[in-house]
View 1 (cartoon, rainbow, N blue to C red):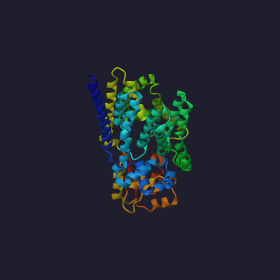
View 2: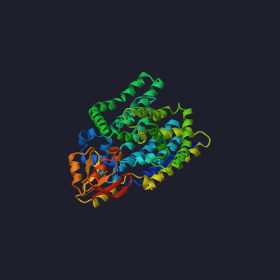
View 3: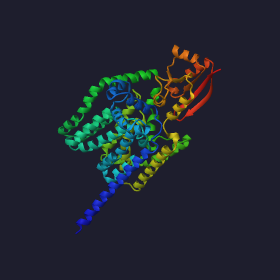
View 4: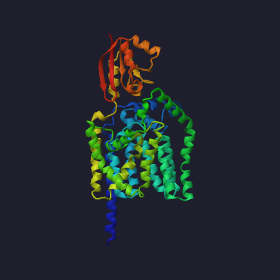
Length: 483
């Protein structure tokens, strides 16, 4: 007699859980759609120009050797834009969708790791994460790599018992797609090997596991000449602009601390610094408690700990030799961070209140970003619109860089700006000398012209700065007139 009521209760519980998960996914999607029409910034404009100006083959043969990434994201973006167009919203929608798709994957990992509640609350944290939302709105590959690494972890959780069948194929496919997307997320691979070695798996398991790497290895072997060209290009770029290493990310305590801060607060900050520090301290409490308690039962979440720590340590060590340690490039370990926090808080007294406190803070920090334009991306759309309308045909627009800035190229209808190098060549000196007025961009000058040689040359030719126009993230555009 008790069978049907019990069965009905189980069905209703399952339906309720699915509805809750669906609600979390919808919430995450909605948050990722707010303010998605911001201006493209420099790296996004590089993506846009690449896919619009190259065929699929050209992305490999012409664009990729001068870039720093494999081609998968560009293929996806080009396929999407060819159907839905090249507006800011359209270019960002693939990342929005991939960001939302990561939410159920995190749920599945949490559920398999420690049960339904851990899955639900971990999904809620990634859905409301300010940092994940920010990069789910970016026309770059970070949301894609985070999704693929999460997928690889999920399939590995299934493969770690029996390395064969469909799960092994999907794990191998995930590894291949990660390699096709970005290089740094491949640092997750040693985590799998460490788990396998520590678990003393049988030879039959190892054969299947090693075989799963074969598609990735084949791709990397074929891709090696392009990778070498990319490495050489990066090295030459750093020789031309040594200060750029600080932007790529050096191995420093500051870079390491930013991983913690941005994982918690996202892409926002507060003034003064004392207030910022206090907010970071206050917001960190629940995370520290969660990670500490998770470390005490690390065996259950060992692979997730490896997911968090191994890429972090290897990326930091690698940045000692090659700069590239930045918190946003480590976005693919953010789900592990949340999973471990929830895993550590779930069973302790008042643990769920602490999780809800994190959700509340996530929403506060996310709202601060979404509804305060000071934290939005560089406003090249308005800056270029202004310069196109204001600059006369005989007034040069000068930028100290290897080429005119990509967002300027994307938004300008005139494309009349000149990219110049320091020291000046004769052509640049003649251009300045023969002009009666000109414009300069301060953008990236701290990296490309830290001693302000450009300004010194302009002043030496009798120019005086008469107006300065500021745009968010772009910095100052200066108007000079020869007196």
